[in-house]
Amino acid sequence: LGFLKTPRGAGFQFAGADIDDPKTLGEGAGIGLRKEDTDLKAKIDAAIAGMLKDGTYRKLEKKYFAFDVYGG
Image (cartoon, rainbow, N blue to C red):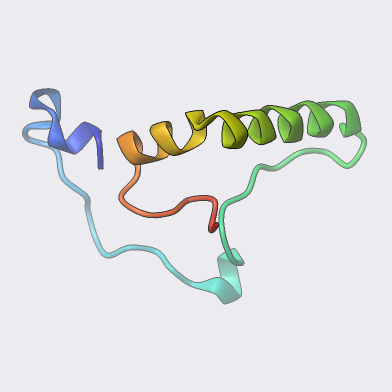
């Protein structure tokens, strides 16, 4: 990923295999919130929608991840 490809990432590596168990982890990525945090959820949803619309999300995803985090 991004950090590992930089000079600061020299000497670091992943330990073990990727964890990919849909039965345990579900599909995709997630953020844990309390059910009563509806205002916070709405703000997060709006922020992500804005980032998807203006291209910021893809720019950050490309920089930090080697896969499609959003699944789109």
